[in-house]
Length: 214
Image (cartoon, rainbow, N blue to C red; front, side, top):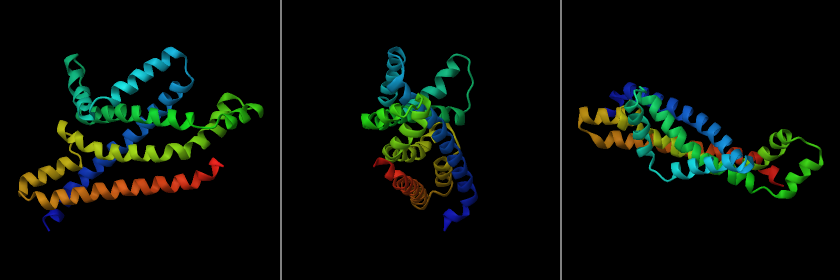
């Protein structure tokens, strides 16, 4: 099969896809955690700023954001390579999504459980670390996992600014062999397996922490 002849090249492209996806998941989760906390607990000005970031970012296509992050800085004399631009753009976009996930997950907790932490004499940091975050985690995990899957699929858009990730290498193979069907079927299968695996992993973690709901 012609795909196997290109396997080293495709494997290198997938390695780069995995690197980008992991970096984006880490950065976006940190952004989202900070953004969600600010939306819930920060002074009004900071809440408004983060709300504007979240609403604006979620309202534009991720491809437009990737192009903007890649091309706009060059107009101000700032040079940024394609991979860095893709990671930054996807992190900004996914960070806005995760900010809403964190806000919704924590905001949905029963007030009585949070008041119990105060009654026990826990500090704000202790309540967040020992009570709020563990209780909110099962509620946040499913939408967070969906966002991770979207991040994985979103890495394919990086090919449009020249990042030699998995889809880019697949398209290069198609352009050389003129056999699109096997390569695109293979690419679709890889994305599906990875996405399905991530979803099952998140479901396992959710079940592990589900007892904290009661």
